[in-house]
Image (cartoon, helix red, strand yellow):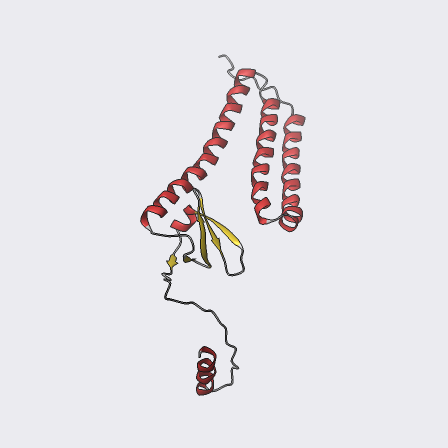
Length: 190
């Protein structure tokens, strides 16, 4: 019987690839925990995920080159890896794009409208292709993928030009009576 794939591996090659994979994992984990989370802005943190994927793909291709000596099988393996990564990334893009189309068709949301999604609330700043930009009360822009919006409970506020909205907080003591608390609220509102 002919052998289809010629794998001539030494124990040293297998152990060295496994150790390098573990060291790479620990290195990336340390960078993520101590550098990325503390020193980069949220906008730049989302790119680290892409960099990490690229590093693992390069490591996987290098490991395959060590295992597969035949160039035909190596080429097939590399093309398969790239196809899997492209399909995986494409799935997220297509999922959010389709969810965005469904979101825009089902609900009549407009720029400047107040919306609440689970714990996040803010005014709609922009309806993008893949995500919704909200501005919260602190002025921070929050990007929410449409796929997360469709799976969450959302409330929208209808504020017309005749309606004014104000937020205020009132501090009352625990031991104050109900009548005194009502009076404090009445004075604060009026």
